[in-house]
Image 1 (cartoon, rainbow, N blue to C red):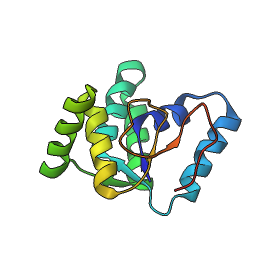
Image 2: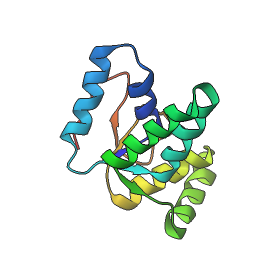
Image 3: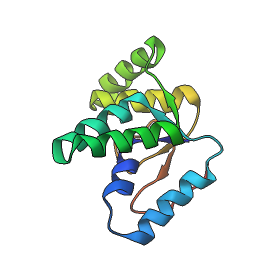
Length: 130
């Protein structure tokens, strides 16, 4: 499974312990847990905008240690551009979606933009396993 940025925000910012347990259970069920380097960027940037840089360092280090990081290469960039053009969605979302397509895995997100890959979690329904 590829874990998208919104998954991390739900884990890092939620006060709902039940929701956090459910989200962590998705990670526990994953055969392989991937993240896009784009999510590293987004979490780091958004954290330093609202909290201390040390918090961003800890969050990103944890992500890098717990997940297999997939960098954006030319193939992912080209597919991301096609997705962004077709769906009129932001660059980051299209690159993450292209990464999930390349890996042929579902994407753990509640973002409604993610229409071209199977979503493994939304806030409106129970999490699914891959």
